[in-house]
Every structure is written in structure tokens, then in C-alpha cells.
Length: 114
Ligand SMILES: [Zn+2]
Image (tube, rainbow, N blue to C red; front, side):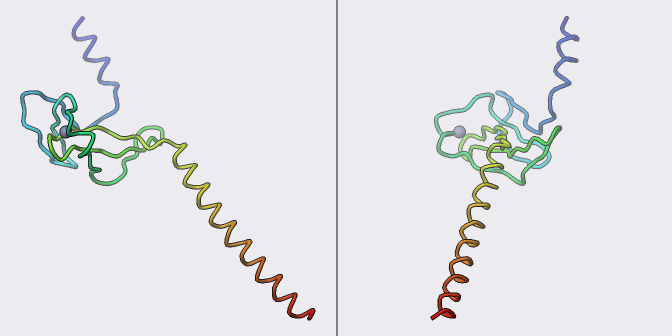
């Protein structure tokens, strides 16, 4: 039964994070990161992003985030929803520029008419 369990967990996404209560927390990014098995109070204030955005499997994007105090590390997934929101902001910027150009054009027409 035990071997069935371990082969089932092999299907999980690859991670460089090793959770261990015995080993000391260590940051050897991008090779590996040793993290305590659970977060502490410090983690809410001291999580810092490590390295570049990673892309995995079916286009899932994530960053590694590590607590600078205790070394607790998690993967923070960047949801596609957030990327869509970023694109929406860019579009809004572009629309504002376009309406500004439109305004200039109209003003120059007024000058010609006068
Ligand atoms: Zn911490």
C-alpha cells in the first residue's frame, strides 16, 4: 500500500521546494529551497519573491515566495484572471490616449473653421 501511495504522488508538479522540519532552511534557488513545513507569524510580513516567473504544465505561471525570517517558501500562482486585468488596464490607457488625439484633432478643426 505504501508504494502505491508514493507512485501516486510522483504525478504532482515538480517543485524545487523541500519541506523539512529537520533540515535548516536554505535558499539555493534555482536548484532547491529548503523550507520549514509550516509558516510562522513572521511570514505574513516578510514574504519576498524569488527569481523569475516560472511557467509550468498547461501555462500555469507562478513565483516562489520565501520568508526572509524563517525561510518558509510557497509557490504563488499568477492567475490568468490577473493577466486579463493587466491587459484591461493597458487597453484603458490606450483608449485615453486615443480620445486625447481625437480632442486635438477636433480643436485643430475648430481653428480652421474660425
Ligand atoms: Zn516566516
